[in-house]
Image (cartoon, rainbow, N blue to C red; front, side, top):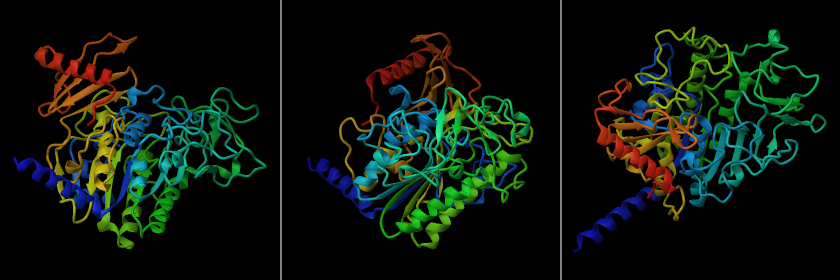
Length: 495
């Protein structure tokens, strides 16, 4: 009869010991980086020594997942612990969309903030800002500071969407009041160049979709007027973001901090700094990977230089799988060579297959995480519950409804990880469920009716998802589809 209390006491003592360490946490969140795009996951045509060092010194996950095959839903899920399919309006957003995370929601940064951490978002945001009627010439809010971050330096959306400016806190950086910003996703501003009429003058031609406003001689999505002094320089974007990260780390080296570093690389438009041009064999896409690796090196070097690396947990991962031609003619297809962006996986960004959601995932914490490789399934939607345990913050009922505590798997002390996880493809509304080695993909959904056949794969035996076993395993198929239906309807899968 005494075993249960003793076990509970042991559990809480271990949790308290972890929380007492109060490590800094850095999440390096890449954009469109595929499972096979870095050296430690088998990349060819590009070298990534800084990322590879993270893997060498830490834990490289073979089965690490984002929550969705596109960026906004993955970012939403990472920060809220809630699958994006549960909330309308969480698909890929325009640059003038309202904030899709309601202030007051328990979020990953708010958990750290509650534990007394300084919290900062740097880089690509793409989760909306304001209430849908943003005046870019005044305070822009709500935004990162209203959902748990104490500091922020962000791109409002993506590099290929206007406005092409940085927001430092609530304000556009370097804005001249005499040259106010106007943004429209409905109609152009008369007299300004656009990607169709001025196509011959573009520094990078578009292949589809990026033919509206012309900023820095590159066509974008959406229209923008004014704000000339505030425009970012695409060629220095990565260096600017890295410098902001290093500055934040230096300012908070004597207190616990959480840094969400959302790199723009390797999203389009791929315009690497001249320092990185020609450093791969794959043109701008490969050179952008080299640039991304350099940013990782800037962050890890800062931690080491300041003597805080041993008290810092670094997570490196991506928001979705790879894409080659994503709207610009940058030779990503022509110069690919033998490189396989998704490695052995099928599909990529926008896909229902593993290449869309299984992404590079590395955890490093010197002296705390033993170096090696883990096959434990882990997913970004679990970061909030796992890090809440790490810093000793309790989760209330209804918080992070799809997030489980998988801290032991992230730290390498457990080989179990997630027993089941959901993968989401916003295009078509399809969900997939992985349970152990099995994965089921719903049939195509239209008007809440299935119009396509579901698919079933055994990932241990068929990682490339080439053999659909739905007909051979009808009972397993029915059971897993029923579980997916239950997850859809329940409103939660966590705790």
